[in-house]
Image (cartoon, rainbow, N blue to C red; front, side):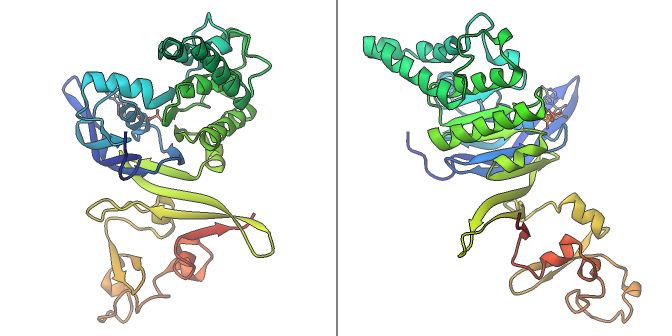
Length: 342
Ligand SMILES: Nc1ncnc2c1ncn2[C@@H]1O[C@H](COP(=O)(O)OP(=O)(O)OP(=O)(O)O)[C@@H](O)[C@H]1O
């Protein structure tokens, strides 16, 4: 199957649930692009729409409006047959509840082998298929660091071992996309780190595009991009990468972006709104290479009143410039670079 454009693409995605005649708009025109091979976290407050998005991307639910495409397939219009094929071949899923991911009466190794058997590899490959299955299981047991416990049933595994087995099960059939809904939600900190490292390993070694929905603040250290959802829309993205300077010293660079939708709407981070007391409406000023946003101060409070534009009042109305608040400083630094150094 050929894919043009982003691997995951949502445009103006809407999902409305109707319960007892009351409508809940879980997704309110969400836009999202994920490139092949990316490792992305989706974060946001409870009820912001994270799980709804993941359920649509997995093909388990359909959008009410807008488009959602994965690997070139339109998830809104695909037939029932295409949907089953999509879930078998293109996407793997890890749930928060460790018990939901694994069959309790099979060992970890047998759980990992099961999707291979169901996909009929053995039938297609004859005795060679059996060998190929065993080799694939061994590869995943090693990659997910399950060597010591692969012969145990889930009840004899720790929560972290169960989730790492679940990741192996989810990627056994070589899906191109791995979706995980709160995979560390039931784990302690150390086990969470191991599970997130396993996600990194699967992404790096197998080339699987990974999307993790989480509340875990630790996640940002393990992914390339953190996307925040607010009120059913993508509002903010944080990119992290490691740069090496000429002397060989490494530094971690963090860049923060607000997401613009197709008609130019964006959400300012809540911390910015609070820092500058921005509400109701703001003044905008177009500079040659950026746009400035100012608190809407009544004209009589801006001393000279006059016809000054916000940019001419610069330095008088911007609290952040005088202090050390990030919003004020950002305008004079390379665009978007908020934090650097380790
Ligand atoms: N099947 C459903 N029927 C009715 N309302 C639903 C359904 N699924 C989700 N919702 C509502 O949609 C909104 C978004 O829910 P969703 O589970 O996507 O949020 P979330 O960000 O994943 O939250 P959490 O972090 O608590 O899991 C919520 O208001 C929720 O109550």
